[in-house]
Length: 136
Image (cartoon, rainbow, N blue to C red):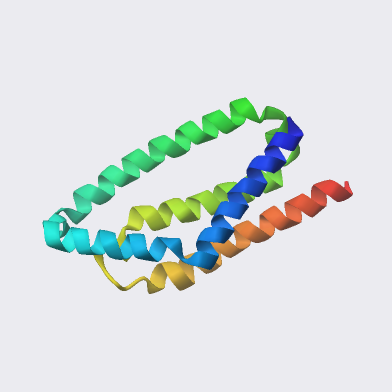
């Protein structure tokens, strides 16, 4: 069971790393921005944000329950790593919910401020948690 946890963690970071290096999300954001402008959805920015928040919260709740059911021993043994993963998913979720990268080109808040307080510490917590558990 522990090997499956590490395999899932490896696959997660592999996908995130490939996306970061190849910048796969930029084309998707451009296409979404053009679609929002041409379809007139820009008028419904706040209802769309609310529906994404509700859907995202439901998905995160489902994932949290699934993780606790599938990896109960891992959650108990690797609390620090799971805290880092939770922070990382919160960062990704907050960026998706904000929709600012789709509705406007001003993304300075999320690229600088939010990244410094959630993404980087989350990655450091995961890294430290990995070495902390292997030492003890």
